[in-house]
Image (cartoon, rainbow, N blue to C red; front, side, top):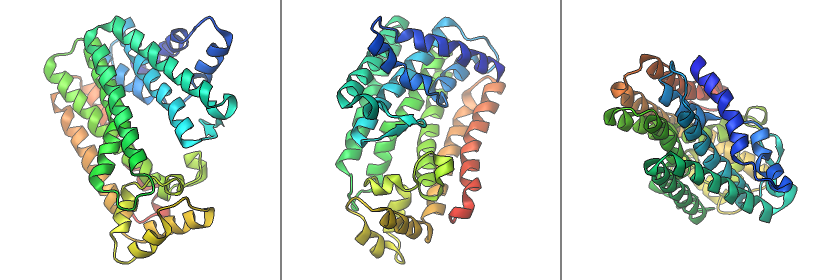
Length: 323
């Protein structure tokens, strides 16, 4: 959608301006991941909803998109510290380059700038992003609590991804609906779309972590497995009569490369991938149904195509799995 491409181009400049501090060191660290690029999916959702895919984005629409992207970026700085990650977006992570203290403070700074923008946009958006940040923290704590636990339940898993991923996708769509002044019925519908799409998006990532390859993922496949994050495909495989016992013996601790690859093979050798893909498609179907209340045909078409693209990602990786 040309209006979204134009809006994202304008948003990029505002994004850098929003974190300018006057301190050279802070400026360098705060813009580090901005300069590294990224899909900008969350601001794209906000701008798409705000413009309906056809109108020109207003200044408030663009600032709303900046605010949600800053929440996302700030969370990445913190996530990399917790995960002890060394790479992010094909560059050294902030914590690897400047240390954990700088990464944490810089992440806090980005979140603070997001809150400042949200406050200027009004109490509804300020409150929304504050709640969303709380959900991100809740999801992260839930993940920490179940690390290396083969007793992790599917309810716990879905609760974590609702907080860690879906909450910000939901907020992105809602911010766009609010800055553009859409009717309440459309605000609710597009908020629902963001939530359901976010759930499917995380499921897609978790499936690809098992069946994908390093070139496509930009990281070693099975990284979540090795780090004790047991996602839906793993939980399904643990319940499988043919592979569950062997998989359970492998898990519960950090994995070597050989152990990680064996665990991936076990998960792919049963119906865990197909069942997880079916769960993802249920969320995708719900996201498309939510669009029934949206009034812009261009927006509905684009969001439906976006949802379908997640399924395409899984199907393209099918030779490595049993979808």
